[in-house]
Each structure stands twice: as C-alpha cells, then as structure tokens.
Length: 585
Ligand code: AMP
Ligand code: MG
Image (cartoon, rainbow, N blue to C red; front, top):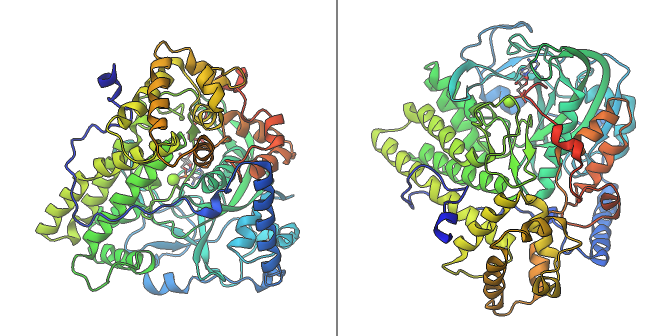
C-alpha cells in the first residue's frame, strides 16, 4: 500500500536529475502581510487593529483627487519599439512590443461593482473614497485617460493546448501606464475588457460580468492566500450588451460588459518572448530580455555574459514554486497556455479556473478542456512544457554551451517542484524536521482523500482545527470533511502513523501545531458555487455578495462568523455539482 501511495499525483513524468547550476533559493512568497498571526477571535481583533492603524497612519498622505494621480509610459516607450502602424484595426503586427490603442468607453450607465481598498490605498496611494466619484468610473473603465497615460496593447504569441498559435496579443486589455508608488514599487496598470485592439482577431474586445467578477475575486483571494498573482483594483459594470456563447453550443446570449482595472509588476508572458523568436526578430528579443532583466531581475548583472541563462534558471525555479503553491491550495488555472504564463511567475489571466473540492488529481475546471490537458494534476508537467517553449524562444540568444546548461537546468525543474511540494505539504500537516516516511505519510493521506472524495480544503483545515481529544477518540462529528475521510478502511492506520510522527516532534505542542497549520490551510477559498451565487446577484446589480466574498477571502485563514453563516466552509450545495465554466469570457 505504501509504495502505491508514493506514486503521488504530483509526481512528474519527466525523469529528473537535480542540478545546482544557477538554482536559486526558494523565495518565501507568503508575505506576513497576507496572513493573520493567529486564528483566534482576539488575535484577529488585534490584527484588524494593526491594519486599521496602518491605514490611519497613511491616510493623510493618500491622494483624494484623481487628477493628481499620474501614470507614466515613458520607460516602456523609450526602451521598446511601438507599432509604426496607427489605428485600432485588426492586423498582423511586426517589429514591436506594443501598439498604441485607445480603449473604447463602455456604454453607461456605469456602476462600481467592487473596489479593493488594499490595492487602491496600499498600492495606488489613493484614498478609497475616490472610487465613489464619477471620474473614477470613467478612468477605471476606459472612458477617460489617466494623466500620463499612453494606452498600449501588447503584442504576444503563444502555444495554446500544445500548438503554436501565432500572434495572439492582448485583444481586450489596455496597458495604461506604470505607477511608482510611495513604497518605491512600480506597478503596471491594465484595463481588461476595454475594447478592441489590433490583436482582437474576431473578438469584440469586451469581457462580461461573470468572468470579470471571477477575475476580480480570485486574483485578490490568491493574493491573500499568499500565492503570487496579479491584483485587481476595481470592477465596473455597464449596460453594454455583449454577445457570448458561454458553452460554445450555439446558445448565444446578450450579457453585460464589464471592465477590471488590474495590476501587476509586469504583464510580460512566455508568449511575449516566443513571438519575437518565432518571427526571427532576435535583436528585439534581446532588447525585451534586457529590459525585463533590468526592471525585474535586479540581482542579474546586465554585463554578465550568462545573464540570459540566469534569467532562465530563475524562471524555472519560480515557475516550479508557483505551481507548487497552486497545488497547496488546490488551484487549477484552467488554461495554462504559454501566453497565460507570466515570466515573473505570478498567476495571471484568470479564466475557467477552479479550486478543487473533492480531492481528484484529474480535476478539470474548464469544461471545454476535453482531454484534461490542464487538469490539476497535469499542471506541473505543463509548467515544464511551457518552460521548454521558453527555452526554445531563448535559443537564438544563448551560446551552444549555454543551451546545454539550460537543458540541464530544465532537468532540475522536477526536483525543485517536488522539493517545494514536499515542504508545503509537510507544513500543511504541521510536520517539523525531516523523517524518511514523510513522503509516504503525505501520499497515503492524498490517496485516502481521493478514494473517499474528501474535500481538499476542508480536510486539511479540519486537521488543523481538530482537538487532541477528538483525534485520539476519532470523533469527527462536527467535521464533515474529516468525517468523510475517516470512512476509509486505512484511516486508523494513517492516523496512528501521523500521531506517532507528531509525538516525536520535540519542542512542539498540539496548540503550536494547530497554530502553524491554520496559517497555511485556508478555511475559505473561492469555490465555483460561491462565485456563481455572487455573479447571479451582480448581474442584477446587487453587488453585496461580491463585497462579502471579497471581504471574507481577504482573511482566508481566519474563521469568520459571516462566512460560516453563508456556508462557505460547509459541504458545497448540491446545485454546485452542475456548475460548469468555460473559456468564454
Ligand atoms: P484572456 O487571456 O484572459 O483574455 O482570456 C482568453 C479568452 O478571452 C479567450 O478564450 C476568449 O474567450 C477571450 N478573448 C480573447 N480575446 C478576445 C477579444 N478580443 N474579445 C473578446 N474576447 C476575447
Ligand atoms: Mg490570456
């Protein structure tokens, strides 16, 4: 039994040999700001207090007037070439990174469906009250240009479902400019759903309410789960009819257009480099790489002849790390094409994603993904596929020796990923130190969860919350996910091994372990049914549930009364089983 269990869902098909060449330390992306220190009511009170006082301290220096807010496109415009052809018509674009493209204003009346105070105040240095102004509605939906903005659409390509798809580009996103905030951070602002660009192909350049609510909520939820991601500042909905065939079955319906104002340190993707390499624009490829390295990889010396190799090695490391973090919260992206894979290794382009409920390595969030290419268990291998495509794109700028080294680095990906997953799942079980049986203990648990279809999020959460007495007495009556798991015929064997492993942890107490585990095992994730329920209301201009979810998912590790009342930690309702999501957005 043990050896079968070691055939972990996370195991990679590719054989791996670990290499230390340029392999960097894992960065701990779980920022302390994302987590409360404890999950007890009193502690959450005190962390709320800390957050409040942080805002109070900053409040005086926040901007109250949007006209004071400036973005800049200077750096990008000076460093990178712009499409020589003008005009917002669809075309094949060459020899540039961006095309100038003006957003198409959404048809009103416009409504602010959601705004994120953490982003508006913490990143954009704006007082949250500005989001209630009419100006904000226009600025954040493409009707008016922010001071300093030269809106651009980005030219990129990508491998979609395994095949080179040629020029894709941002067909419905406008880069507005960079904002340098008080903390010294530089963020790129984008509108998504803001109308046609030269890359719109046959699309209308719009996004609908349902997909925009999902992107807004999920990117913020991921941030607070501690997973690297783009952020969302606001969500504006309109009355503009947008025709969508949601399930590609001929049933076209008019939905409503919406725009998300979203932010990332960089929106460049693997496909940003691929298109230049594929079309033989090697000088431009070098230029973009140099720009990206200067801006986002400050530890790489621009004069280092090995800089592209170090860049590649970093992306390999951090992509492995990102996917391990997705797995730690049961997140399936849904469309892991190379155009949706950030070169800063953050989660971008939220589409038909899903958080796995019943544990199942074959969980496929996207109903259009017939072959399960992007199932949750396939993500690690797909990460490798995408990195192989990145390497192909880099070949023209690497020497023969560097190409060989890059291949060796790529072989290290599987080990990096497995090492990271191992660390993460050990932490999810509260295990300290290293024991040779730890892998088996984790694999055995996952196998039992698969057999009993136990809920991924709540099994780990309840293991974090269960009292010592309940564990010893196998009393799980108030714990639905653990109760499901406990019906497995080998559950007692596993529990004995787990308790024995815990008992050997020196200087650890049951309470300390619970505390550690509650900080890595969320109680709330954005389940499809939760998003769907909020979307149905939002489509009727009731944004209360979007707001509630946004609020609750900002503290996913803290038990919250309103969330419990709403059933967000309860067994998903029956109707949730019928829910489907597709690429249509
Ligand atoms: P994203 O990369 O987030 O834009 O998501 C890709 C999906 O967006 C595609 O599968 C399409 O459903 C949709 N899409 C892409 N381009 C456009 C466009 N120009 N207009 C409308 N929808 C688009
Ligand atoms: Mg995309």
